[in-house]
Length: 105
Image (tube, rainbow, N blue to C red; front, side):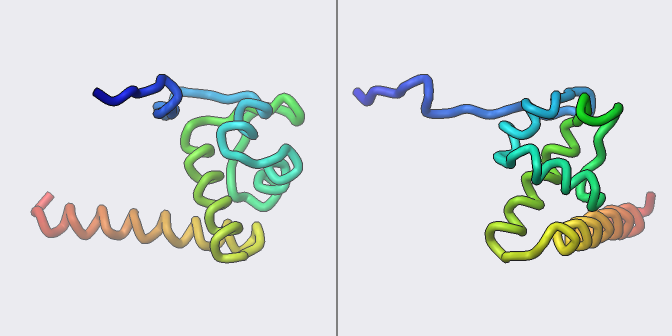
């Protein structure tokens, strides 16, 4: 029999209604506060409320994590990550539209 520890799996279930404080958001996306502030300034993610008491939603966390992967894996800067994410979002929208057209909706 194998031993499985409780720490072997961890994660966050994201919905549109979940929100994070700035500190929680930084921990969840693995970025320090300076990078998160720059992500907001560059339009990579959106924050609600006045700085520094921002509130972030689940969708922003997904975008921030994708941006961090682009930055770390491909070496793009934040402006490049924002552009890439916007283009990826647009591609997903177009694919969804194409599927609706193909299915006759």
